[in-house]
Image 1 (cartoon, rainbow, N blue to C red):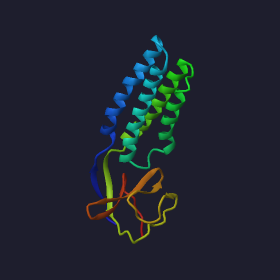
Image 2: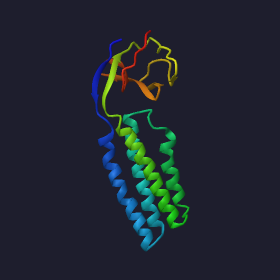
Image 3: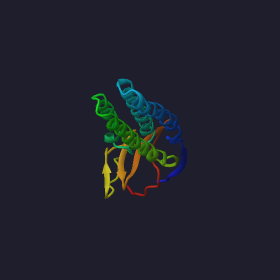
Image 4: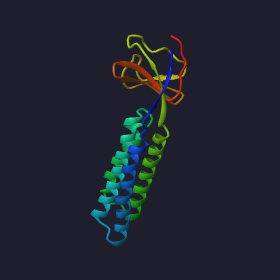
Length: 174
């Protein structure tokens, strides 16, 4: 099984623009609470949370399997909770905490850019058994297939080629 290295576009640049713009409504909502607390300030905080969630979603589509769905679910639930109008300090705290969670998820996703390792694979052959691997799928599919010590091995198509792709070389025998 011959692995070869390919350069891949990471999610970092695609997440940068929405993460930066998510700060504008977040700061505007926090400042609005100082002058005139109300539904507009809450809406701005919720908008800032959801824009940062959108940035993490974009990144999670580029590097599937790295961020758990629970991390993505925190933002909509907390944005919804803000509309129950808890005290202003609680709303600002919730928004900052959720934005920080999204920022850390985006930072984690940004680390996985650069080169990937690929090898050609026959889709009729089942994936080999590897001790300690968590299998998402036993046969090849164009999605994450298994996790080996925190590293995701996924199936990809490149034109007419059917490949396995991983951020590191994986050695296993058939």
